[in-house]
Length: 159
Image (tube, rainbow, N blue to C red; front, side, top):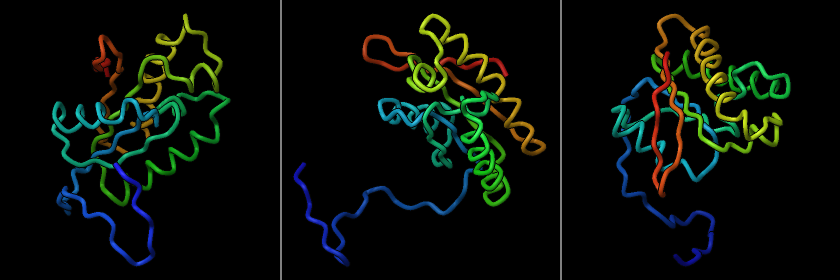
C-alpha cells in the first residue's frame, strides 16, 4: 500500500462497508492489543451474531473492572463510558474478552507469568459482576482467547 498524501477537504478513501443505522444494543470490552482485533471481530460477528457493536478497547480490557488498586482511574473511566453507552445506546449485552500473555497484567499489574491466566480468569469473573451492577437486565458474556499454531481460540467462561 502506498502512502496517500493528506490534503484538507479532499476525500482520499471510501469504505466498501455499508453504513448500518440500526443498533444491535451490544458492546464489547477487550484489550487494545491489535494482534487480537480481527479475531475478536470474527468472534463477535460470526460466532455471537453481533454484526455491529460498541467497542471499548483499552489496555488490559476488562482487567480494570476487577478492582485492582493500580487501575483505579482506568476503572472509573471505563465504568463511566459503559454507563453512557448503556443509557444512550440502550445496551442489553456486554461481551468481555481477555487474552493470553496480556502485557497489561505483567507490566501494569505485575502479575507473574505463572499466575497470569488464573488472575485473568478471576478478573473476568469479577468484571462480570461489576458490569451487571451497571443496570438491571444486562446480559454479560466473557471469553478467554488463547493461540495455538497461528490461530486464536475463544473459551466461553462460566457466567
